[in-house]
Image 1 (spheres, helix red, strand yellow):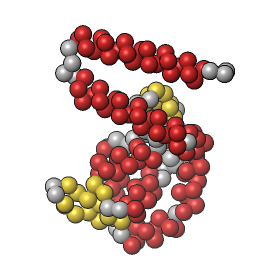
Image 2 (tube, rainbow, N blue to C red):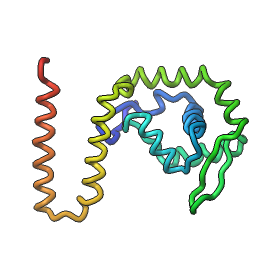
Image 3 (cartoon, helix red, strand yellow):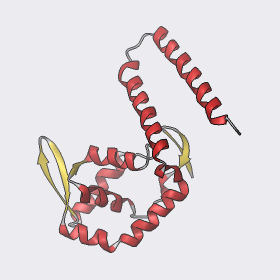
Length: 167
């Protein structure tokens, strides 16, 4: 199945994640350091090069499930719920190493470019551009938005020309 993501059409996460795989991504992130929910969402997006970002409706129920299982704990810090992996969670993650490896192989098969550092950096620039437009664009006049659309259209044309070189 395909869905429309922030950068066009791509495989729906259900095709690369088997049932229950997503919890291992969260545990792996929490193994690095404690995080609050938004940090987890952002970190997953970074790991997937901006091509998959989980919704809060996926992340928060998974966090609750992991907490119920005893694999993570949470505590309020500066008004945010911060999650930390437990020893039991670390043990479970280590036991599931082959599951993690299989999941990342499926990810690479779908989105092999994620490991391409140059592409990843380019997509970060693109995401920064989108955030700039989202931050200020809603207050822009129709004239300014028309000019921005013209710049984007020219940039898209230039990028297509660069990518078509030598084909």
